[in-house]
Amino acid sequence: MLSLPQMKIKVEYEIRKIGEEEVLVSHKGNSTNLSRLMVLNPSAAFLIRETGDRSFDAKKWGEMLVERYGVESSRAESDAEQLIAKLKREKVIE
Image 1: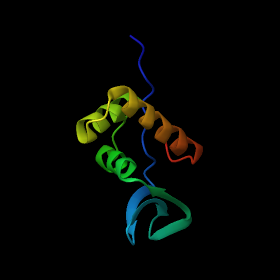
Image 2: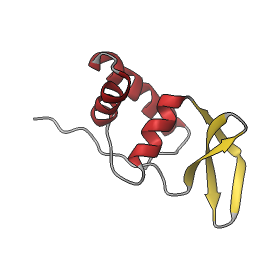
Image 3: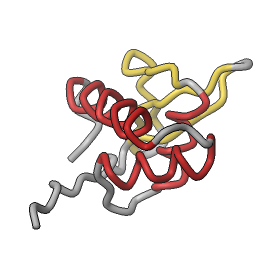
Image 4: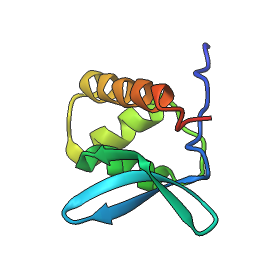
């Protein structure tokens, strides 16, 4: 059985609420870097918040989306893969 690579959100990233938006920001110590800000839709915020510092892959995130939102598993995994690709481009995942 082929195993999918396990990933984690880097520890310096956290979700913050700014106005009505949930955003992913980079912080180190008491300093927050708002130039590295990513606005999250509700499902992305859910996945990142629920995963915390645990490992994940597209299959796990897809399962979480199916359970939470009742979407088809193929759509959920595709959405998860797109989010992971974006987080990789932004160097949020280790």
